[in-house]
Length: 282
Image 1 (cartoon, rainbow, N blue to C red):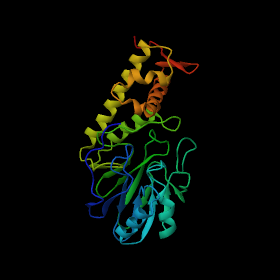
Image 2: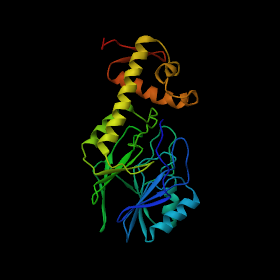
Image 3: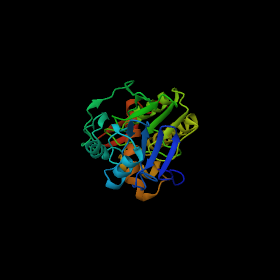
Image 4: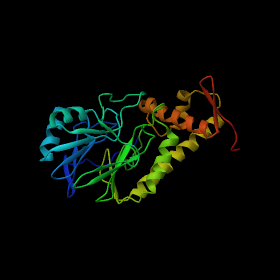
């Protein structure tokens, strides 16, 4: 993990009909907090209502200043979607998105009345949000492209200058990198991340993450060749020399994701919970 950047204001109007609220859940994993986005003026769609904190739900309703008709989530990790059902219960809004997968720490209270697939639209009289399925960080991860601005709400798929944990089995490193490469082709004008400030140079931010992941993959492969037959846990100190030891547990999850990607690519093999390179690149 790396820094999320400077502190953010609790409220920002990013464009006419596009507002951002900062949830009161700052932490090592969430940076300044989870970003909640409000789209529309006369009728409101809320994307990523964040944790189910009464203070934050109150502020969403107060800031909306108009009926909240739809509640969406980019994915169902606990810092992004748990506020959805409380917000819907208080406003009568329709919950839209993809339900929680079976694996990992997921918000299983998130039960969308309308399931969105890749390319599906939420079309209103004021704005259109297009769902872009981006599995990798989470198998049900969606980004949302706002047609009027050509801005993309990225959840945890793209965060500027920061990496996110890819946690198997629901997290998948190969899918994550493939999704990043797809987003690069969308030519969006800006990115609205789940944590941190608006990103006005999307290609730079996306390329930084891809380069970082491929550099880490190269370190994993080098460690496999130098130290064959180690478990993922025992490989961590050889691959993450730049990470503090108290973060090794989290690093192990992303390391495992890299190993599974290398296995799918035919470059690594696992035998009895230990890993080695197949030497196909030698």
